[in-house]
Image 1 (cartoon, rainbow, N blue to C red):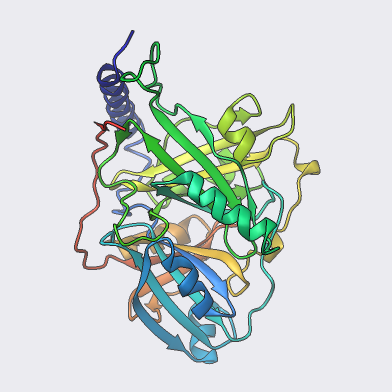
Image 2: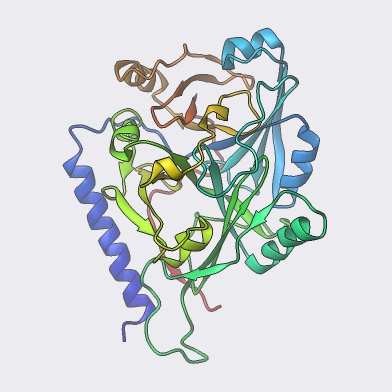
Length: 378
């Protein structure tokens, strides 16, 4: 029987070796952009106060606020509407996993909205929680008792890193995670709870969080097209590292089956990316193998619509990244000051994902670049 410590050591060693190989293999092709993990997820709304109250339950608090006139918003975002913009942070985590609420006085559309899992255009933000069954109960009550449009999936156990080994006893307990999704009108969540291990700097839960939840650790995107083609720019323009070649996940895996509501025989293509400058803020992309049977609401993914329509990265090499975006025909906007006085530009990738690239902020906590697994007794 392999012990927990031996399993983790083997996985971390493998991760380091694979990362080193990937870095060496693609060094001549992948630019050193300095881009960190995903900095913010942005959600469009007509009622910022309701969203501030909602996300406070998960530990998010306002750290910055600004407003733009219609003309100013049009110049930065291409949206002819007054904008109230609020940045929120979870606890002390300021290098990744933030939230920006975009209150549009005149949104240009309804957004993707409440939709079945794996609808093209859906975006999902992932966070760790200390009590996943409490989360499930809360959203089940909102759905069943309050008749609100939320679709929670039941928490499902998964051993992501092959750490769970051997005969269970009261002292040799299972090691892994339980995860679940919550699909909503403006926001789609994925929650996970760890058992038997932790990763410093990846999913930090503030004691003041009512629902014991962390910053956003990574982000999921349901897109269409050949993943090798539509996501290539994450390496060639943004300098991220593809975790593996495109793979196929399906209903034979407990996590994808439950989280994505897969019927027997269903599967999808998957590709993940991570920044060499941050273990957190990962990106995960999913594309259906049978696109003719999948709902597509990507036409409602425009900036200025409701729901999750925009994400951000930061970099100390803003002009360089914009030049790369231009060279790769991504049609970036000019570099201008955004509502918070930050130098920034926008572009939309061939996968339909909209990005705001920001100048690097002053941080209290620098991004972690080393993945470390630590055993915990729970």
